[in-house]
Structure formats: C-alpha cells, structure tokens
Length: 109
Image (cartoon, rainbow, N blue to C red; front, side, top):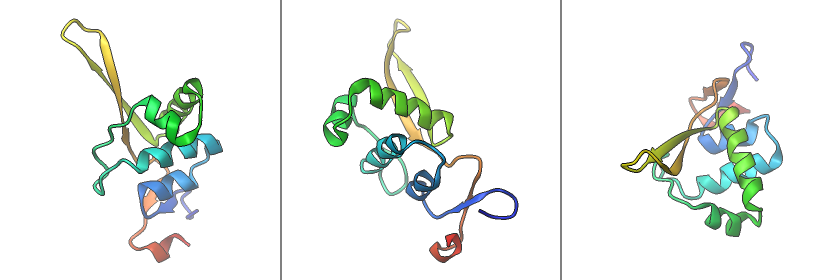
C-alpha cells in the first residue's frame, strides 16, 4: 500500500486479488474475468454458467456479486423490458476507489 492508503494495481484481476473481500467474492470476480475482453468489456455469463464454473450455489453467487458491488469491484446495471420489469443485471468491472494504477507491473511490488 502506498503512503496515501491507495493500493497499487496493474489490472482489474490484480485489484480483485488485492481487495479486502472474502475468498468466495474473489472467486466470483476472477470467474467473471475469464469472460471479459482484454478491454474489460463484454461479460455475458449466466448465474447457471457461474454455478457450473465455480461449483457454488446460486444464492452464494448472488451474495458474493453483491459483496463485489459493495467493495467497488463491480457495477450492477439493471436492464428492463418495455413494461418496466427487470430482465437482467449486467455486472461491469471497475477499479475500487482505493486502487492506484501502477505504471508497470514492477511498481506493484
């Protein structure tokens, strides 16, 4: 950690690994990372696919997605149909407020 309390990170997965969250929250986020493009966009995975990938129960995945949002690792974007009913929730990766992007991998040591 740097003098100002910010944690130097190189990538979003590095921010996940260094986050002060439970191990299963990290597992859910790192599983999401497998489906992201290199630009950090394009996550399209269902809860059922996450259940298969992680061997976690649906409620546990939902709980840890909420924890990742609360920790600032994900943004939840809710999508609705024409009648205003929620259809899906898209989770977008974000760097938490205490992350400081390192200029190069060696800077995070």
